[in-house]
Picture 1 (cartoon, rainbow, N blue to C red):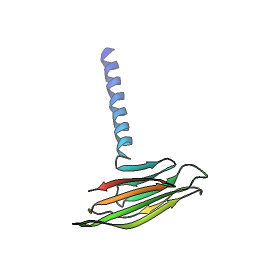
Picture 2 (tube, rainbow, N blue to C red):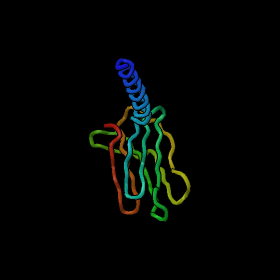
Picture 3 (cartoon, helix red, strand yellow):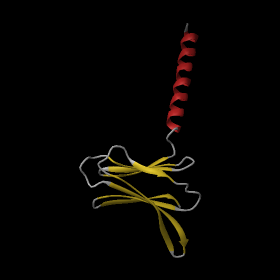
Picture 4 (cartoon, rainbow, N blue to C red):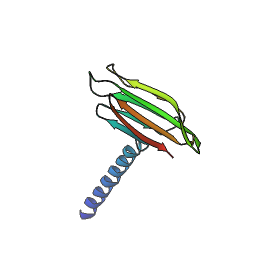
Length: 120
C-alpha cells in the first residue's frame, strides 16, 4: 500500500511539473514596460509582436515607440514604429521583425515616460 501511495504521489508531481513547465514557458519571452495607466508588451516570438494598452478609462491614453540603433559612434537611434491606445475597446499594436540589431522602446502617458532596452 505504501508503494502504491508513493507511486501515485510521484505521478501527480510529475504531471503537475509538466503542466507548470508548459504554462510557464508559453510566456517566457514576453517583456513589459509598465506605466501608471497602461503597458507596452513585446512578445519575442517570430515574428515579434507589440501591444500597447490603456488600462484606465478617461486618461490621457498610452503611446509606445520602437527605435533601432543605426550608428554606434556616436550612438544614433531611429524611430521605427509608434502604437497608441486610448479610450477604445482593445489595445493597439502590431508586428515588426526586430532581427539582431540593438533596439529600444518607450512608453508615454501624459507627463509620464519610461524607456527600456530590448536588445543591446
